[in-house]
Amino acid sequence: MKFRYVTGACVLSILFVMTIDVWAHSGATGVVKERMDSMKEMKESMKSLSAMFKGEETYNPERVRDAANILIKTSGENITRLFPEGSLHKPSEAKSEIWSEWNQFNTLAERLNVYSSALSKAANGEYLSDEDGAATMMGAQDMMMGSTLNHMGEMNWTQEEAVTMGVDEVARMPVENVFKLVADTCSDCHTRYRLEKD
Amino acid sequence: MKMKVAWLVMLLIVGMIVVIVAITESSRSLPQLSSVSGSVERGAYLARISGCIACHTDIDGGGKPLAGGAPIETDFGVFYSPNLTTHKKAGIGGWTIEQFAKAVREGISPVTGDRYYPVFPYTFYSGFSDQDIADLWVAFNTVKPATGKEQSHTISFPFNLRSGLVLWQLLFFDDKSVAADVAGQGRRGEFLVETAAHCGACHTQRNFLGALDRSAWLAGAKNLPGDEVAPSIRGQELSSSGWKVIDISYALSTGIKPDGDVMGGSMGEVIRHGTRYMNKQDRDAIAQYLLEYETD
Image (cartoon, rainbow over all chains, first blue to last red; front, side, top):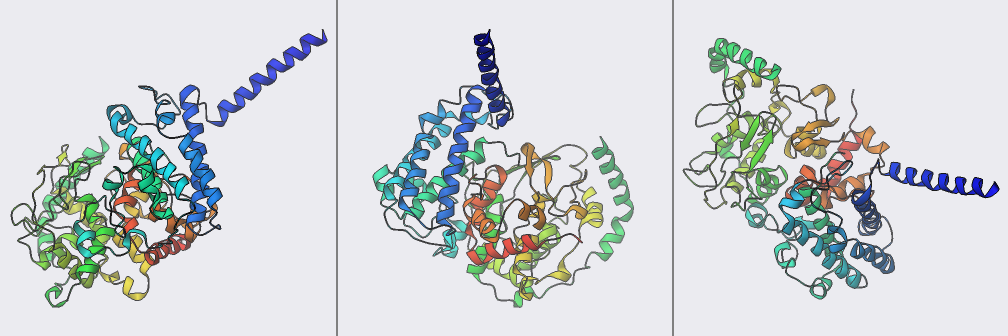
């Protein structure tokens, strides 16, 4: 008798926890939930990284590496495999363009992996605190007519060039610029492939 | 349906008042713009942060800078930005500075006299000072002539009847010429938000005729094209969500929010092609203005 009660209680507890877990992501299940959980991990990493890079918290190479390693783990194929064709059921915020532009989506996931890996390698390296970002050293011509992808006017390379670089090459840049490449990749993907509801 | 009926009614009224408007058109005194010396550097910066380059370049289509052809989806149809290069036929190469000012600050085509659709945010740009116009003008004159995809707007009837815009402007265009040079009065943040970067264009709800709801300024907007939502950027909402000056300033540069989320959608584009080019002082000024923004 007691055994039945205990078993019943266990089953109920498991069901309860599963329900809570589902509710925590507003009803997300399956791959949608898995990728939302991944994105949440990435968000926590970005929060940690940006707090350091905006000067709110002390820069700590170890902390940068830890955050970068999470991004490495949640990028590339590890994220694209969570987007099987047409997986748009609620509460997914994905857009259908993911599948009509699969190559581009895939490339962004791969680049995130490259840049995150470079971030981990560059963590101990030169750290610029260039507060003015793209506004620095950008002449009027570049500002007015330069490639709109050339947002890093202070360096002698553009995002177009960075796309062709490997991990080691990117890792030679100042760490803050590597982080900007990471953030820009997140932004590129969200701009094109995520529905902005808030 | 309500939108279409309202537009048609506006057209009828326009037919009655068009003469009066023509007579009183020069309500804004002709500026002595040719005597104002412009700075290419200041103008290029202003053009970038005011969204000229982002809207008038078909970035996704690989278009040449400022050659137009970029599609802008709205509830009224799809608009295609015109060519602003120095091309004499396709662009504004044959214009004068006075014509440029008329277009940008008054929302009136200096070539045809037609009113522009407010998808072009001249209701904000009317706050540009003569110096701003002079700076923009010399900067635009450095842009190489180029052609782009020349496409007419695809607007449904009756919104494609431009005459309705005459009344639209009378009803909803609040000429800010009186308040021009706000920046010169030490109110840089206000100038950036309310004129140059025209944040209210997305962050304020529009009525069924596409006019911004002044009673809910910067309080956010739902049902934006692409089903997007723009949040409130008023002080109270920002503060209660934990945003500080440093957070807003940083987000305008990087797209990263204090919780680590990276903005996408239209705001992602605004940052990538516009606000990230702002210097820190300007981003801080915007942040300060928004955090202090209260309704009366």
